[in-house]
Structure formats: structure tokens, C-alpha cells
Image (tube, rainbow, N blue to C red; front, side, top):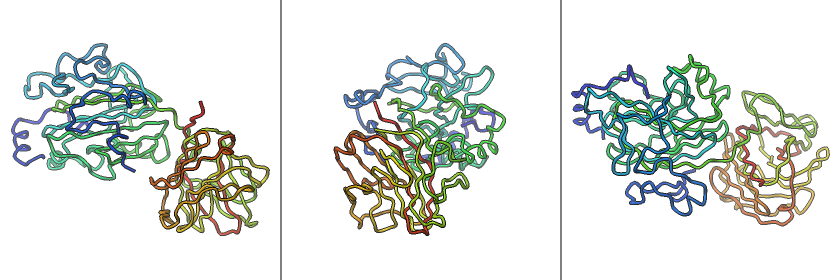
Length: 440
């Protein structure tokens, strides 16, 4: 975060802060983060290494890092000590210049980044991603930033609006949905997931921010932000990871990263490019959302991808405005409105959303417990469907619904398709249709 001119506060202000105190989640194993009290610092477990995790900081040297817009690592402002990368290590000496921001020597496109940080009073730093380096430009001109900050100290100063400037925020654009920062002097667990245009920030196991780059919403936010003068902001497809030096004392450790396969966005938010309509029911785009609505014939209708898929991990969001009897077909084929394949059910509350049904075949293959149906009519729901070989799993709003092993499904490949059930009176909205192609 850049506040004002970026100059250090007087020592009196630091003393005042001391006097005032200043003080869907994954499991610990799934997060891949050592506990803040663990002795396993800056190491990878055998499982993490096998899963593709790598350390970006070895705990002993600055290997793999250099200064922003520089070939070498800064010779001031930074230190490696006791297994920690320390920014603002000379902050107590006002005559020593800050070292400046640092970046990884490698570039990353799609990744899961985990790190731990500990704050001093009035601490101010940030983790930036897909960095673009340009002479005579600051790192934040072009790279999105995960804010790292002593939140309460800057709130108490009252010098600026802090709504999008606190820890875990997407700096100056997206505020955290929930505040999860631990007190000064305790270790915090940060996480950034970037895949295609989809970005998530996590803080201490809480997802604080989720957004999509280059959507109409994002473009509007950028146009109203401090990034409006910088045309390349957030537009790099890949780039280094950056740590910001704001002249404040912050400790980092356990910095690790895993490259991710690219997420395909199946719906562009503008039109039906990449899709084919089957039947006479209505499919259209409104306010950046995909809408399916019963037409005058009140028959079955489908919207199918032009591409076919075999192994995949698919996530969609849906909101049922009327009735809501629909579904997400996979590994399927269509002739008119006759479909051969399988669907993950989308149904009104109290029924079998997340179950697997085979159309024009065996019917229901597996139903979830209807008593545990947590679909919310009139609100956005998130469904995930993962098909690998002959195994299909579904989740609804982060809760696993079914797991099915079926040899016939394992032999198939086909389109993804959204359904309108017959009978009329149905209206469902869809958004954030994202797929990871897992076919080897």
C-alpha cells in the first residue's frame, strides 16, 4: 500500500501506536501452510513436493529474488535472519534509505501462493502478482496487490478512506468480505490464487476477496481508482511475484508456490460465443449474466459448449429466479433436444441438487440426501463438478454432495450443457462458468 508520500512516520507516531496497543476454508493440510508455531519453517513435506509445491524463499539466502527493475538484490533495507525475509530491517535508522521492492526471478501465470507474515506496529507492505517492470514506474502502477498492513494503526490515523486498503484486500479495488487479521506480533497465513482471470485472496483460512480480471465490473472499478492513469494495470498474463518495501518492518517466511493448470472461462459475460442453442427455449445475456428462461413452447432446451471435454473440474454459479428445474450436463451429446449423457441436477430447494442423472438411460444413478439440500432459492449458489476417469464428484456451496464411480461415464467424452426442463415457468441465471481441463 502507498499512503501519502510513502515517507516514514516520526518516531513519536511509532511510540503512540505502541501505547495504543496496535495489537469453503481449507484444512491446515490442504492449505499447505505450516502452523505459525511449527518448527517446520521454510520446508516442504513429501506430500507437498509430490503435489508440485516449491519454496520461493529458502530461509537462508535471497536466492531467486532481485530488486524490482534491477538485476541484483537490494543492498539495504532487506535482511535474511532466523529463517525470515525481513523488509524494513533498517527502519529504525531514518538516515538509511529503504531498499525498494523485490521480485522473483521467475514469472508465474496461474498459481497458488502461500506465505506467512508478521507485522510490527504501523507495518505497511504488500504482495504483488503478475508484475510488469517498466523503467521509472512504481511496481504498483501495473500489478494487483494483496495488502499487508497494521490495519488498526492506519484506521486510527484517519488520514484516508481505508475500505479497500486493509490486510487481505485487493488494494484500492476490492475490500475483504471478512476481517481475519491476527494481532500485532502474531504470524498470519496469506494465500493468493490466480488462475486465468480468476483471483482469490485468503487470510488465516478465510477467503477475503474473490474477483475476475477484465470483467465490466473490474474495468469500472479500475477507471474510478488510482490505477486509472496506468493502462497496463492488471493486464499481464504472467509476471514475477513481488514484495513491497514501504519502509516498515514486516517479516515473511514459508513462501511457497504451486503452478496451476489454466482455468477456461466458458462464458465471456457478453454473448453466447462458444455455445450452441438446442431447442426453442430462451438463452440470452443480461447484466453480464447468462439467463435461461422457458419459451412459449415450454419444452426441454439446452445450451451446449462447442468444445468437448473428458476429464475436468467445473465450477458454476446459478441463481434460481423461478422454479429452477435445470441441470449441468457433462460428457454428453445432443441431437436436437434429445441428450445422451449425464447431468448434475439443479433443482428447487428440498430436492436433489448435486445428484447424478442419466437422461434417456438408467435415470437416477445417485441422489444426495434431500434433507441436506442447502440450495438457496433467489440467491447465488456455487456448484462444482469434477469428472476424472470413471469417478464423478459434486459439491454445492462448498459441501460435497455425491461421489459416483461408473464405468460407462468413464468411457465417455462430450460437451458441457445447461438445461431448461420442460413444463414452463423456469428462469435461472448463471455466471462464473470456469473449467480446468484435466485430460492428460
